[in-house]
Amino acid sequence: MQFNSEKPIYQQLFELIQLDILDGKWPEGGRVPSVRELAGILEVNPGTVMRAYEQLQEELILFNQRGRGLFVAENAKELILKNQQQEMIQKEIPQFVKKMKQLQISLEDFVTVFNKS
Image (cartoon, rainbow, N blue to C red; front, side):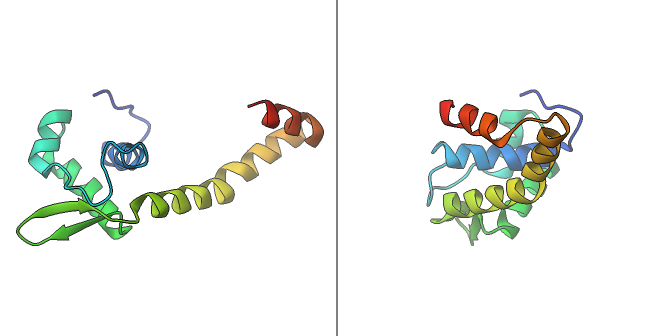
């Protein structure tokens, strides 16, 4: 897999796993690959995978069952969507609105394009 150099690999992996959960590739309640297994598949350091998994556990998207491994939480999709919506509302939309104002794009023009999408 190709990673870009703009973000740390563990952060890119964290985001990729979330997308895979949203897409159903990693189903809620399902067991996730072990650290070594995923590191081998993606050809990254196991510590990188561990760091991404730890971040996912902190956000309650993954949980550990002692002796069985890591699993996707039953409400993982809902948590991911809420987190990503908040991220977009707080960071991306204000930047987008600022750019629209700078370029003098009217709300009506935006709504027209939005409704066509």
